[in-house]
Amino acid sequence: MKTEPRDTSFSKPASTLESLATLALSVRYEELPAAVVSKTKALLLDTLGCAYGGLASDVVRATRAVADECGGAPHASLFGGGRSSMPLATFVNGSALRYLDSNDYYFARDPAHPSGNVAVALAVGEYKRCSGRELIAALVAAYEVHLRLCDFAGEPSLWKRGWHHGTNVAFSSSALASRLLGADALHTAHAMAIAGSHQNTLAQLQSGAVSMIKATAEAWVAKAGVEAALLAGQGVTGPLPLFEGQNGWAITVAGGVDLAALTAPLEGHYRLSDVSIKPYPVVATAVAPVSAAIEVHRAGLPPLTQIDKLIVKLPAFALATPSAAAERRYPTHIESAQHSFYYCVAIALIDGACGDAQFTPEKLASQSVRELLAKVELREEPSFSAQWPQTAGGGIELQLRDGSVRRYDSAYPLGHPRCPLGDDELAAKFYEHADGALTRPCAEKLRAAVDQLEACPDLREFAALFGGEAP
Image (tube, rainbow, N blue to C red):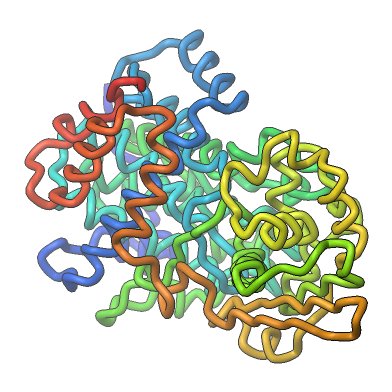
């Protein structure tokens, strides 16, 4: 039997979580600028493409096998076909969209891959038969909660305190699920309190030799966010003073949170607009130098034997991340390669491209690639450091044996809001990933459905396209 929450703190001044829940429920489709609606659909299309590209991975096969073994109510559709419960669909689909490390990103105190929220929105939205407009507004709200935490939580940041940035998904995913389930602000706050009490993820997840479980970073937390929303809906309460409490999240996990800024009313600008879309399946801080390397290749690459040194220029923040660690110079598997400044830039320079084909076992073992990797030097560029995180710039400098130097800088990497991917580029990326899992007609139908999402009356119609037909 459903019971009402027993926590009586709602009669006192609102907690941070209650204020944040009210914010998450305040976003209305009718008030969204056309540009925000368009960006939301672009992010959704990009995320779907990334998910189909990750379906064949070992980690996604494993998460699906676990979901199949556990069973549960067939609430929601899985990418590639089949159904599972809302939490397990979130877990499987969320792992798929994250696997390639080609999904969207955002930089602030902490980075974020906010499309981890998409798996929640699709699973719960389908179960509740929400409309396309409701899905769009709910995603904008989830991105707002998630990215405000990146902006205002962490002293100096979650990452530098030893926490993975996926920790922030606990609050956005539980707020998102609660909203789509029809919860009020109090129940939503309890869901966030439940999720935030448990889902704090160690940064070791993405340090050293990156393991397969990295692909589940946001998905694992998001699954728990859905479960927290379901529990709150059954009357289970969480510690509402989770942020400001004596042993609360703000002190023990974040080390400091600007609570006023975190819960400030919306003033016409939505943070979803500030999200970047990756043109390459690499760690986000490598996008700019990879773009620079591709441009140098296109201008005419000299023989590799004539290269004395390949200098990768980065902001100080990037040089303090695991992607710059010495053990990443010669990666042996895709997870570490995609998170290696050395490898990503070197392979982009050699091939003039940086897609799935650049991360095969053959490429990783190539003798010519390894010889160039030995010549890579990572170096801070003060101008990029000064502009961080607004620009996320990077570049390369190629020093040749004849004494000549070739340089190229990318202040705003391709996919940044100041240098967005065009419609054709977005479509090309989507088809590149989806064509391996869907026939082209099915992929085209799904792309058209995203484009017309605001006209969809029932997300079950949209989700019916997820199974598609294998090529």
